[in-house]
Image (cartoon, rainbow, N blue to C red; front, side, top):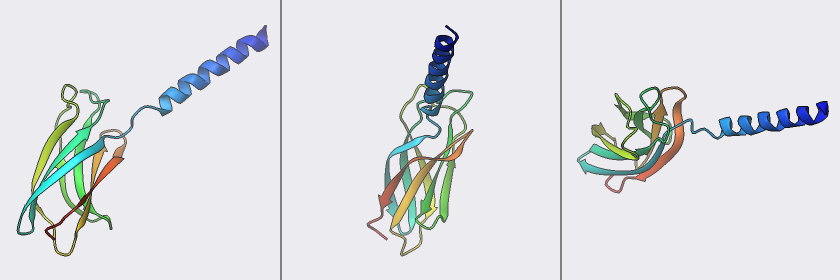
Amino acid sequence: MNKIILAIVFVLFCSVSLQAQAVQKFPNIINATYTVTGNIYRFDVTISSEYDSAQRYADAFRILDEDGVVYGIRELAHDHANEQPFTRSLSGVNIPDPINTLIIEGRDQKYGWGGETFLIKLIDN
């Protein structure tokens, strides 16, 4: 009988542990577009963060190149729990020539930068 109870406890523990690992840690960047005048860009970025709440939410996204140089960060001051996915803009981003590939990445309040990124090719640079 003790072995059966121990086996049940073990199965329940494993189940809870697997569910905890499946929790989304980061926002995902699911789309991005841009407009450009000269080398000054405006990015419209669509983010999905299914866990968004007043207690924890996606609080920023950034534009960086493949070498990790950051060209701009948009801070997000509140949750978007009732607006998923949501789109926000970042204007005035100076991208120097000859950069032609950028990565857009989201940030979570608790875990930092990560999640699905979005790769964007610049045809004007």
